[in-house]
Every structure is written in C-alpha cells, then in structure tokens.
Length: 155
Image (tube, rainbow, N blue to C red; front, side, top):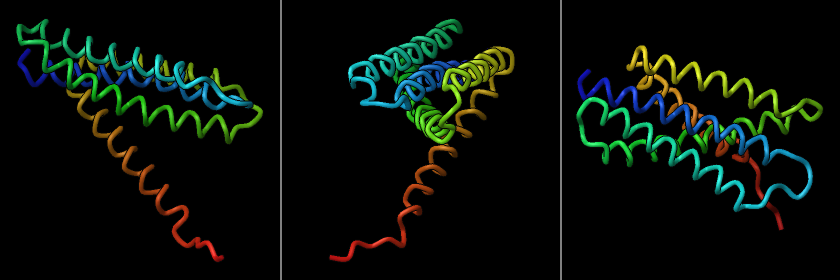
C-alpha cells in the first residue's frame, strides 16, 4: 500500500472515531434540563480527537511512513467529524422529543463501524467519506445563515 492509500485509510478511521464520539456528545447535549457540564463534552471530544490522531498515525506507520503527519491530519479530521455529527445528532434528538437519543447513537455507531471496515478493505472510501462530511458541514453552515436572513430587529 502506498502513501495515498494509507492516508485514505487513515481519513476513514479518524472520521469513524470522531463520528462515534460526536454522536455520544450530541445525544448527551440534547437532554432536557441544564445540559451536561462543558468539561464532560470537552473530554468526549478529546477522546475522539486523540483516537483519530492515533488511528491515522498507525495507518501511516503500518506502511513504513512517519506517523507524525497522521497525528495532525487525524486530529483535524476527527474534530471536523465530531463537530458535524454532534450537531446533527443534537438537532435530530431535539426534534424527536419523545424518542430516545440512544437509538441514534447506536445507528451512528454502526455507520461509523461500517465506515471503518470499508476504509480498511477499500481505502479510497475514507476520502469519499471525508468529502461527504465536508459537504454536510458546508450545507449546515449555509442553512444556518439563511435561516434568519429576512429577520430584523425593530426598536
């Protein structure tokens, strides 16, 4: 496997790590009441970022490439996935007021496991998943800015 395929595999594994922790954080943040303490969400995010960095680095070092570029790329990739998926799960759990957020975490975790497995078997899948997460992030950002476009405050 060359550097490109090892990097694609690393992207897929880092996305999977960020996705799982993002789903957990999104489900916890959607609960009624005061919400979780900020340090708890930061700890969950930290676990996902470190896991993504380590998995990306391991993917590169298994092919006799230096691991340190993978640590940086994996951390950034896991952070992107964490932020997007936590927002998606939090929004879905808020809209589904009666349903359990645990089922969403299970579904997202299964999807992340499938992504990780496909990234190991077919490494370019990781690059496709990275493009999909990036597109989702841009689309969510665009929708947020458009949501309050016509509103003005009149004093």
